[in-house]
Amino acid sequence: MEIYERLQSARKRTGLSMSEIARRLGVSPQSVQQWETGTTTPRPERIRDLAALLGVTEAYLLGAPPEPEAGSESSHHSPEELAATLAELITVSTRDGLLGSSDLQLLEQLTRRLRDRPAK
Image 1 (cartoon, rainbow, N blue to C red):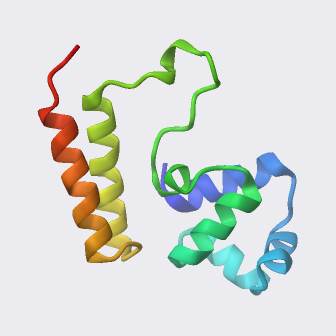
Image 2 (image 1 turned 45 degrees about the vertical axis):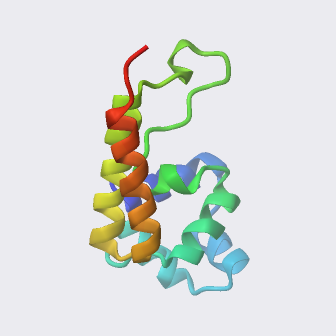
């Protein structure tokens, strides 16, 4: 699922209108509409604000799998799964210019460490 699809889905789950999101973030309703159609991508600071407003993580909006419910069996991910998720986040963030080079380097380093970690 792309950022715009996740954004639209999260907004609908909260019951907020595009106009209400725009009002709360201090942007135009057209901006929110463009984010939800994939015409434009919100800037990093807007991703943070959107995530907080919609009750999701920034990682989810950027493409990470949804957070499992507490206590569920799937709440523990293997290092390989985490590395794959980070790799996907790096790809999306690089493509959309959402993170700076130092942030991307940290994510790449973490991805390598997860991939090199011995299985339990």
